[in-house]
Structure formats: structure tokens, C-alpha cells
Image (cartoon, rainbow, N blue to C red; front, side, top):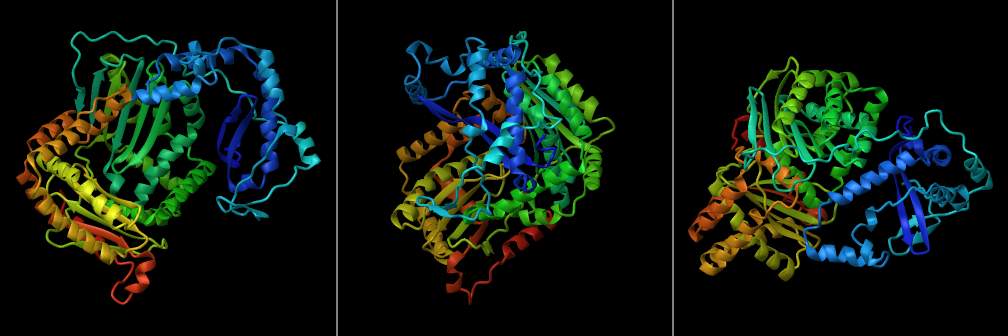
Amino acid sequence: MLKEAELATGLAAFTAIDLPNEAAFQISIELTETGLEQVDTIVEQVFAYIELLKNEGIDAALYEEIRRLAELEFKFRDQPPLLSVRLMILAQLQQQFPAEYLLIAPYLLESFEADLIEHYLAQLNPDNLLLTLQHRHVEPEHVEERYNAGFRYEAISTERLDSWANPVAHPELALRSLNPFIPTSIELVEREETPADLPIALIEEPGFTLWFQQDQQFLRPRADIFVALMTHLAMASPDNAVMLDLYARVVNDQLNAVLYDASLAGLNVSIYPHLRGISMQISGYNDKQPLMLEMLMDTLKSPDINQARFDRVRTQLKEQLINQRQEGPFQLAMQQLFTSLMSRWSSEDRLIAVDAITPEQLEQFITELFAATEVRVLTHGNLTADTAIEMSQQIQNQLLQNTQPVSGIRVPVVKIPVEQRLTDTLLLEHPDATLVRYFQGSEPSLEQRARTALLNEVISTPFYSQLRTQRQLGYIVFANYLPMSDVPGIALIVQSPVTSPIELEDYFDTFMEQVVNDIEALSDAQLEEFRQGLTSRLLQPDLHLSERSQRYWRELDRDSEFTTHLLLAEQVAQVTREDLQQQLEIIKQRQYQIRSFGAFLTDVEDIIRAPDLSGKDQLLRQRSEGQFH
């Protein structure tokens, strides 16, 4: 109701303080600018809802629903992977509960006690209210010493308290109905006689692929369903990139109440844009997943793009893009790195585009989006092949009627030119300097990926030790293996309050020269230790169903073999000292660095022009000439 009235964008209720003899119940509401002007109205509706709960909400059926959900959560919860974490949780719980209840206490609802619920609801009244309003236009009267935050406080007037004690409910204010997504069946489906070790393609048609695997290990009544809708339109312009984002936000906004109910029932949905289009994931109890899929397909096909919803999601996107520009220097440098080599459209490009988009343009774009599409579906978990096929047919029938199939939609990675270090210089307000230098492999082969990943194992610790610990250049110092669409690469990253990028470049050069000698001096035992460390991470087993599903989904972007981690581990075991030396020379041939001078710009302003995006310009020429990996 508050969202439809453009008063709020989010709401949460939770226990804020929970001590042996007292507790606080907190309701947090994210206000719009309009909502900030109508705080008293919003508070009145909060108390009106509490009155509804007192009069109509003490319901045994609602209690039974909550009890059932808690029971399911306890029965099918995923345990923390580390024994130490489990012991820490138990140690905390034993301060509150008898030993025999330690495991089940957070989930245990033993009986419906209407009088007790009524007693606690009675405490939620204006006389017990602490009202906190946070916004940027507060005129402070005091300053909090530790965080230097300005604040003021005052008593709430009697008139306001009286009005909230006798609230007038909005006509649309109502209690929620019973949750339709609570699973009625938690049985495991019929097991396959000859289960596949890896996902198999049940449907392979032009523009549409369905992958399926029935879980045989975790044995939970859960499943994961992934759907990717890919289109050549996604990367065509900043307008299209913005409209994809707006499309996902409109769908999420329209389904907000539905998705909230589903999440309470252990069924989580994620709808998100990406460089090739838009994707969705349905995860949780499999019983009601077909129902959720039907609702998603209907909304994706024909979303309700009314002006109020459009304005709301566009404001959210603008705020996100603006916030991206306020990140730290090294994060902004990383944004520039990915924009130049992969995504093409920067936050600034999209900020310019977002103001010009209209609801009518978005509706037309959605129509064009489904004119020619490649769809990829992965189903994994407590499902049968028949159920997976039925859901894929549901997608085709509801969403893809009259859609022309396309294929080969990929995100190309621009080749960094050989033997010329490209440089971009950003002009940022942050006083720290930063330097991000990226070394790119020459091809996305398994051999180069394994060698580059192992090379990063060798250099990451000494890079941190020398530039952070010994030279104390800053707190943000690290080397990171950074592949892009399987094109291997390594990034050296420093954000420094004490050293200019010119000096950092010298440190980077010196370090990379030293790496040559370090690899030459590696003993067989040291090299094997690096191999084993990387291999152990590559072969770390999936601890939960969702972890395996996510790995399978990532693998579909590669070769659809679902064994990349195994193949990489095999390659790592074969990497020799000579291989590392050769790979080091390969990645040193393709370098792209992004720097910011911060407060040090004045020291070198005679020779440095900022901003200077000559590196990006060269990469744009590479893009226009089709110089991709």
C-alpha cells in the first residue's frame, strides 16, 4: 500500500534488542521524498495495521502456517560447513535454552497461544514508541563523538501520540491471506534407474536448450531452475542496456508481494539483467515451482509498466548508477577495466540514457526482445525429466510464441594490443591514488588458464608482502587472477594515500622483473606446494545443492561439459617451471592499466592530463576492427 502510494520503497520488521528481561520490536521503512513529507501518515498506518492484527490477525491458521514453515526449515536446513561455526552457534544458544532444545529451539513453535500474542501486540502502542527519522537534511543540534554524526532529538507531541492511538486505516489496508507457496509435498520424486553423473540435454532445438540432472547426493525436496533469455539487442546500445535493467526491475516490482510470500515459504526467485539479456532463477522447495514459473512467465511476457512503477524503478536505477560513481578509486578503476574490455557501456553512458527512456519505449523494447532470442534452461535437484520438460514447454508456450531462434550470442573480450601498455587516467575526487594494471593472456585455452591461475598463486603473496607490508603503500594491495569469459588474466591493484601512480608504476615494473627471478629460483617442492594449493580449491566439493547448481550454471557459459574444474586441475598438475616462465612472458605482452592521481595530481599536472582515456580509445578501435578473443 505504501509503495503504491509512492511513500516507501521497502519495509522490514524484526527484533532489534533481545535481552533476558526486555526486547524491542523494530519496523524499518525506506521512504521516498514524498514519504519523507508524510511521516505522520505512514506512522498512523503502521498503528492501523497493528490494530488490524489485534482484531483479526490472531489466527490459528496463520500460526499453523508459520509453524509448518519453521518445521520445514529445521528439517531441511543446510549445516554450516565448519565444525567451529556450529560449535559457536551452539555455545550462544546454550545461554538461552536447555541443552535438549539447543538444536531445535530457534525453529520450535509448540502451541498456538492467542492470549500471549495479544499481550505482546498490546505493547506495540504509541506510548512505547521511539521514532527515528534519518535523512540528509537533518539540522543537527548535537554530534555523536565516535562517528561524528550530527543528530537532534525531541519529545513527540501529545497531539501526534493521540492521533496515532486512534488511527484511521486506509481502505486498502488488509491482512495477508494464507501463503499459496507453502509446499504440500516434501517427498523425494521417483529416483531414476540410471542417473546421469552430469546434466544432460533433454531438449536441443534451434535457439532453445534444456539441461537436466536429478540430484542423487543431497536428497532434499528442493530444486534449482535457471532460465537465460539472450538477445543481440542486449549489447547494442546504452539505451538497450538501461531498458534491460528497467525491465528486470519492473518485473520484480510488479511481483514484489508474490515473491515475498514465496521467499517466506522457502521458494526464492531472482530476476536480473546481464550483458547478454535477462535471466531468472527459482530455488527452493520444488513442489510449488511450476506455479511460480507460470506467474513469472505471464509477467515477463506482459509486464504492467504504469507511470508510477516506471518512475519508481527508474529512480532506483539512477540512484544505483550514481552510487557506482561514488565508489573508491580502485573499484572505479576496475569498473573502467571491465567496461573497456567487455561491457562497452559505462555508468556515465547509462546515466545519460536513463533520463531519456519512456514507458512506451520500454514496452516496444520488450516486444522486440522476444522477436529473436536464444534460451537456455538448467534444471537440477528433486525433479524428474518429465517435470523438467513440462516446465520448459511452459516457458516456450507462454513466453516464446512467434520467437525467431538465434544462437551464438556471446560477450566478446577485446584483445589488448601486443607490446604497447595502454593507460587510462581517471580524474577522481578521492585523495588516494590508485593503479590497476591488467595482464591479459593470448587465448582462452585450458593450458593458459591453468598456467595463469598458478602464476597468480606464485606472485600474490610476495606482491602483498613487498608493497603492503614492507613498503607500506596502502591498505588495499593485492594481486588477483581475473579471467574474462575464460580469457585468463592477472590484475595488480594498489590504492595508496602516500604514493602517486607514477611511482606505483615503477614499483609494479620492479616487481614484475623480480618475478622472473623468483620463478627461476622455485624449487620442485615449492612449485608442488603451489600446485596443490590451487588444485585443492578447484576440487573443493560442493557442500549444498545450490552450490552445485550454481557451478553447473557457470559451466554452461563455457563448453557445457560441466567438468571445467576437473580439467583445470589436471592441467595445473602438469604445469612446469618453464610453463610459468613462458606464460609470464605471454601476459606481459598485453597490458592495460587504469590510474588515478587523487591528491597527487597537482605534483605532476605539467606532464599529466586527467582525465585521459587514450587506452579506452585504443580498445574501442580494437573493438571496431573485430579484434576479439
